[in-house]
Length: 292
Image (cartoon, rainbow, N blue to C red):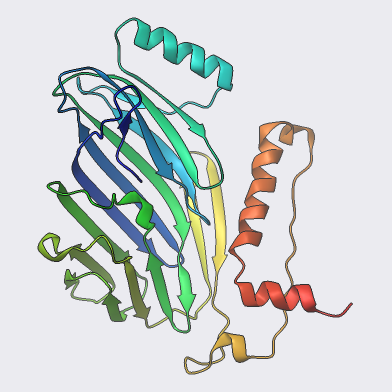
């Protein structure tokens, strides 16, 4: 992330606060990222905000809290219609926002009519997979969300781990105050703001007693369910999986009935592509080089 920039004046809109909550459960990380910015100039600004995308994750929700406390929720629509609605809103003197995908690495959000002394808050919810390393989980935060060179803003960064077995070991590249529950299955790490260094990428590793045991994760929403099988196929904790002689087989089953027309089949195909992109490089290399 970079500071929002005034499109007309080229001014940086200062960062007031950055709050991050990362919930780690088995192989998934759910992130809520909140950034507040304030217009310290004497003129209303139209700003550009560059949001980095996750290489293997997905943004599930994007909201913008306006100075009057109202919240703009994201709504997907055609580009031309979105631009027309945006221009109509700001021409009437109201605040508005529009987001467009620039490339594979950036989403550009344009904020219109940010008045002097007003603040705006960008709230992002996203989900991304956690990488495994032998018998440990390794969570890495996308460094682009932390503006380099920014000073004087409030920082609140919390990592929460919920495990179905005892958390045995943990380490962090950032200095954190860490507390564990009595049963050792829950852990909360709070980044020490006084010793925070944005030039160092955050990497939090932890080991649990049952990390190599296969798990089925089930998500319930209304009358619908989604399930994901998570497992790390190690023969023992002292052997690197890349050194084992193993095979791999992936089977994708997609519903192609009439109810899957339009965006639904596109979502299914994108989910399959996300899975393929998440395959570790050594497995991909093995599949690619396997003799027919």
